[in-house]
Length: 273
Image: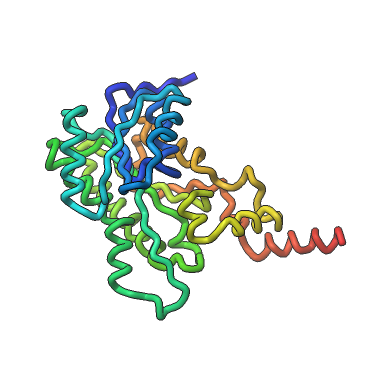
């Protein structure tokens, strides 16, 4: 059995107190890493959070209030990190996203698009640059969290899909720029994940529907814990030959998610009736 020891490793995860960010942090903490988790004011239940880290025998995280779209917040949190990690940030997980939803073309507003980019795309670039400015070196691993939105239609997901597509584009270019620095930059594109943010956009009915209609089982729907393991694996050192990649983590379901699959399910229902 291979055991990954991350003692002495510092891991910064934006939006790390919920969903995929939290699931990732638990894996790093269990391996001995010191995690730094950013969150927006009032969005973290500290007692409940610490209990989860104690439950996996992990190093207690350091929580930092910060808005990823505000440069002053970024500089302040890096100063806080310097107090306990003078050498800097070894692994940076760009996880925060913002969902400005719309139902029609009339809802399109340039200001809303820019805000989505400020939260969902630009932090990967800006945090990486400011880490180098503050500590003198880039993170050894930069991992950005994307979704399959750029390749699929989701009602109201227009801006998010656009921001994720641009995130993936910058991830590839960042990988080239930082390779000579010894860094690895990759993007993980997750399929449908049952998270608080997804439910806020689409509602619980979506998951009830796909299970009820036989389009997927409960076990085939991604959970944050599944995603956290994928993030940890990519940062473990065993996958350092991968750079500038957009990795799909989705149980392979999009391959079968088409009209033929739904037709086959309909036929089975007809036969039963």
